[in-house]
Length: 562
Image (cartoon, rainbow, N blue to C red; front, side, top):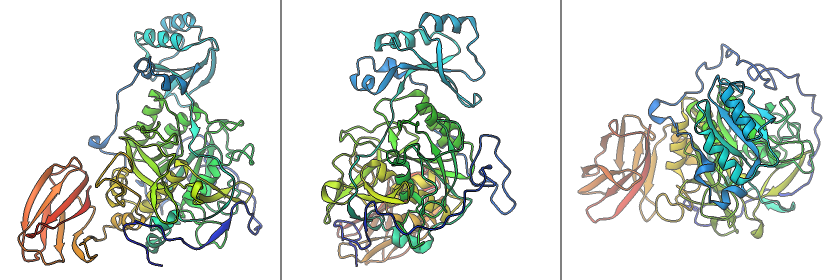
């Protein structure tokens, strides 16, 4: 079955599952005893281990100073004093107080501040105070106005970095009943063709899922999820406390990395190892303290490159923003669901500069479109298949206790992108988080308005194009009849790109255009001759190369400067 390259229509695919059915059971051995992430199945809290001799010692690459993201500390409670959306998305009775590294609560000034505002009951504090030094206080009498007063006074206390109410985080999905569907997500993004270059399987390359819980004994995840930590309960048990209700993380993990070609269940996007960061409580809600500490911990784990966060809140948090900065600056990419309230703004943490916001694509059997629930806005970066149950095209994945089922939401879109990021890192271990983010944008199938737009971002992820770009394989663009117009290679490139016009171009001009639409280079080409363009003098990022021939026909192709 031939697909339209530009994905203007959706061709229905094979392999239909009955959602919720338990496939043939396999006899599974007991999980191995817990040990560190370098040596065994479950990473315990503690120091990182020295890599084995046969494994890379510099697998992760902290970003250069120019690419670091260090946003200033924001006092969001004071910036949003009259913003009802913000106050509806926070818990004013839980006060997050972050101190400078090395500071404590025992100083006279801090004690006076805590006493004045009745902050006596500590319900949580950071486990790793060399990374983030916070305390969470419970004050059931606190109100919006009293929190604002606390924040205003806290700004004058030297050792306080910021004070804010805790943000309420939820899982980004729209619950629905199991049903019949097809696993169309990888099909429309060309994963099946990208897998010709490899499906993963490198135990050293670890993708991370941060979510409520994961049934890592599931028949389709057992060989994949080898490491985990419960940051909510601070132990090694990442399993659902209630398998019938806490199924979100298992479903997300299945989309990222369910075992491919094992004859059972579904196919995840990459076969590499998974580290699961449990941030759900026994009641099923998400724990903001666990999310924060999990991120600081993951920032220190060299083998993790891509992190899936299918969660978010409608209020910004200085604590979470700084944690995300730390993860990005450690050389890792965070793929985060944009949110499900249908409105024109991106939820947090997806909206932070350090995160890649993933919108959701729906399908009806003929067309692809932004799913009705998906949020969109200026921070929308790319989109992936998230499903639309109204048309019968949900996302099929794993559920606890060897079950399978359908869900929809930006929660289901993000893991498609995370799996692709993991696959790219597997194909080329030298890729940095900057490389991966740029390649995802530059190879995406454009949807909506030409180029980037706030609805689709750069467009729908293109696994085949990204896999090729990750390896420096030639990329090409086509003319209106589908014939090759010109090729660019290598793409990405750090020094020079070679433009090879394969059509009959006479007196053509070639422009290099940045994402703002500004032409930064312009050259002439004629007679179909190859043209070398020096890109050493332009910053890293995504660019458009546009060729216009003498007849004023114009052809464009994205490329990435690394």
